[in-house]
Image (tube, rainbow, N blue to C red; front, side, top):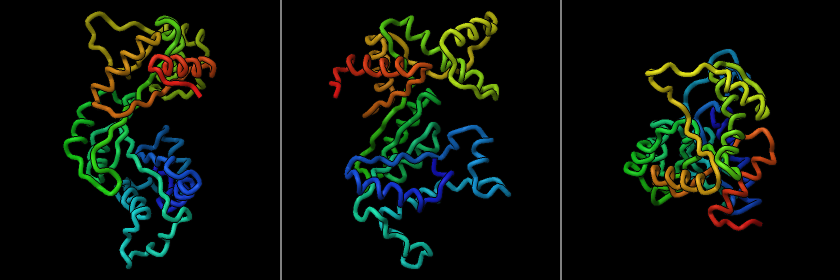
Length: 260
């Protein structure tokens, strides 16, 4: 989340990581605060005024350190010698809105869209591919979609396990931050929630791919087709770590991915 950092700090840190682990480090850069307004404010170094919305300038400076493209008369030009030397990470742009797709296309960067935040992102990904400008980073568009997933032995069990995250998100929308609750607590809470009135327009909800392995595989393949995605990243939130690990194992088996 670049607004929380200085571009030079990010460039130096990921330069070092890229030197330690060549060709293994991705630098995923996002514009959003990634949290609630109070936490974002607490992360600000200067709290005398609101942080400026200068993400395009931050991104340009960050990439220039890796590209060695700062003009000789730039005040930071002498800082361009990064600790990783010739090694650099592969930058990605994160997004959940049309503007992020515009920037990714203009900069010629791979683009990762957060479907788990905004499930209406297929058009954004399509615009990104159409408007993509080849760069030193990427010759052709590359898209990843991140999806909220819970997999279990049965569809019903997966829906029950997902209740914990559903409750947390509902309360987050109301300004209440809570730890992810146990499944039983979440199910009681959701049962007590008022039911929509008959004929009322449905509220916009976040997409969830929930179910047994075959159900989840079909759901993930459908999302990948919708976005014409090269890669899918899964986001799994459960109360128990063992349930999350089991979800990953079942998904790997469903796609024939061997375990190490």
